[in-house]
Length: 176
Image 1: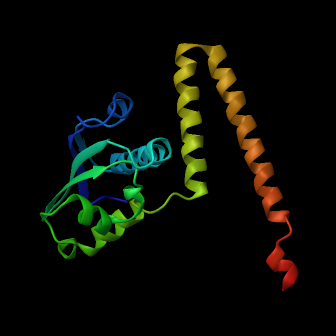
Image 2: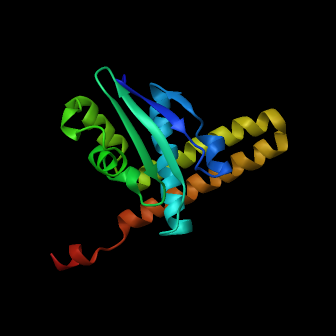
Image 3: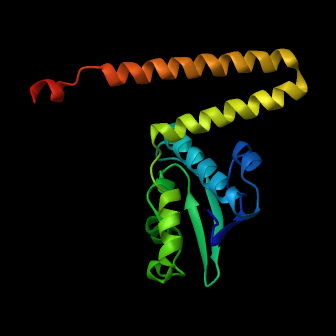
């Protein structure tokens, strides 16, 4: 699906070095917008687990559409990136009204900024394993084989767990 907006990261100076390696200043368009939001949501959740209420990691970025530019300054660690575009505007921008946003763009942004679901994590892990495997094959065949075996083992374990969950007796099913 074509995006009718882009993300321009304007300041990462208040992010730690590890986050700066993954999120760089510049413009994200098309499929890179999805990658940006998935990455920043992961960092947001990680920061909430690591630092609780003491995170001092901030990112400044603009959401740019044909008609408006929404400047945002958001702290990581509060799971703000799972609460929708209205929430981000409320906490990170005083320069725009959330009513001015194109409804189509608003809907897409809210889909991007929804809570993680286990399936999304699984897809992210699968993608990470594939990327690691491809990268390691270039560097060293043995590492590539090891990562491939680990990924296969993980996938098999996940499938067994999912089957077990489906067949598991439910308290509510028994009572009905």
